[in-house]
Length: 150
Image 1: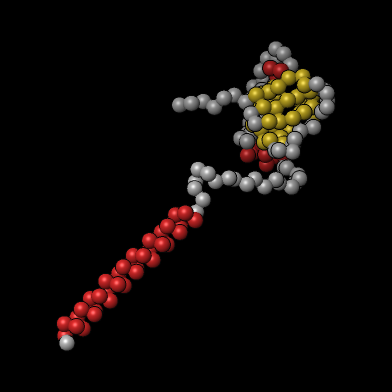
Image 2: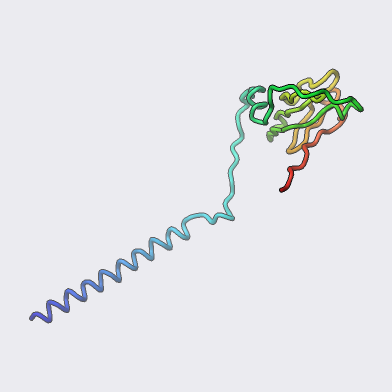
């Protein structure tokens, strides 16, 4: 009688262990195939509402400082400007951080006057286009310097 009880306890233990392994395996495979692969995931981009941007906050975000830099000699119209940063949006909006005549950079929204007779026409990643009017021909394009590699 003792052997019979002992063999029942052993078979119950083995059965429990097998079913525990089956359950753990099922959970593992459900988690593995249920999650999206990291390389194939598609990022959804929410378009922001037309909230007004704070030019001073944008300037600080792009690294503007309050210290004045020495004025650079003026050679041509395009050389007076330096593009420091760009915030481009999908809806032809955005802002650019532009330094004029070696002075600290200031933020300008698309459509705002940068200098006398020059308007920021558009921005794109790493560049800004200036012209005499918003819809007129482009006078010149400012481009960000490529990042330095160490």
